[in-house]
Amino acid sequence: MIITVIIAVALIGLAVLLHPGRGRTQGGGGQALKRRFGPEYARAVADHDGDTGAAELELGKRVKEHGFLTQQPLTPAARERYMTRWAAVQEQFVASPQQGVIEVDALLARLARDRGFPDGEPFEDQIAALSVHHAHYVQGYRSMHAAAHEPSGTEDMREAMVEAGSLFQALVSEQPVSPPRQSAPTAEAKRRGQ
Image (cartoon, rainbow, N blue to C red; front, top):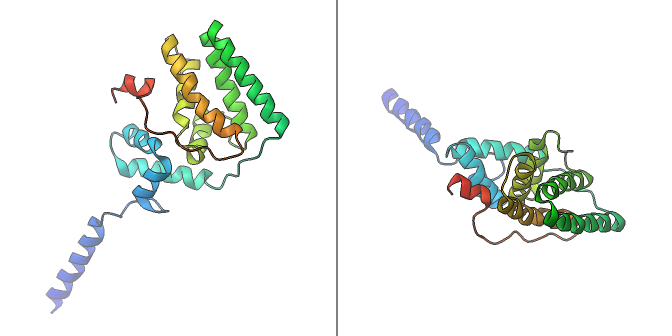
């Protein structure tokens, strides 16, 4: 009888250890994080060399730290200033792509800060907070930031500018912006071989 109880307890313990939901983050586990973060989930898994558990812990930590952040509204005048500046920077890009991406990087950092996100120092804090609320658009900002701070070809800078436009629209808009549909690989994905 004692041996049977010991075996039963051991089997229950083994079942708990092997249960597929074990080790998942709070708030719905891996599937919920995949839905919430979309392409950012895949990036986190890749950054953790395929370790979904580590990626989910990181993403769960982001949600815990930034999930309750309330985005501050922009005044109509501030919205207009940002839209005017965005148009001017796009024109500047034609004459000086490098200066254009530097300006867009700074513009996005200011806009995110004005909407209530961390101020961008360090950049990783701001991108982590943005990823919780705008996961489908942060890769464009990440590409823009890289192009502004590392040597990049004109085509990479152009792609970064286009990708960053989605985050700009999401931040400057009062209405939620639908996530983009699957599109061609980004410049960074091409470099990574994805």
